[in-house]
Image (tube, rainbow, N blue to C red; front, side, top):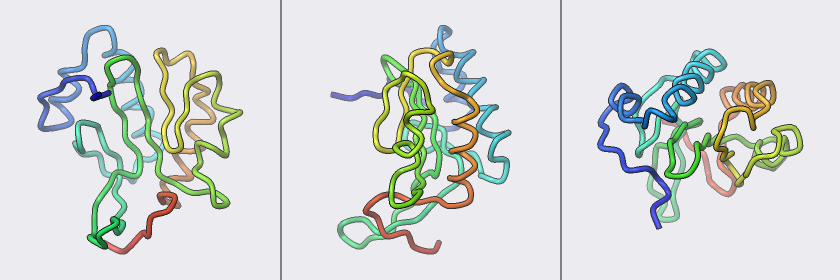
Length: 144
């Protein structure tokens, strides 16, 4: 099952234009919020999401891969923010899960239907940690 909302975008601008009307306000708010929280991270279109900053890691075949440090995605049934950072050997989302609010969380992502479900202060704090210390649990991070 593909959880991503169908999107034919090839750029961040196109992605934002193609977000359904009922989600545009929240996606645009979050896009601006992330850019203000971590202004040094380059914004780009990445794998059907908006990416912020890049990290490089070795995959299981020892091939170097690029991945966003932070990404924002419009899914079919919710919005997701993915954050790749490790704090004390845990993904930041796990460390701060009690502070995020009552929303669905994965190891590196938070999922929500409405922006009111998110504690924005906690989100900002986690984004800033990711900017300074990107990482993926179980992956070997390498230089560009």
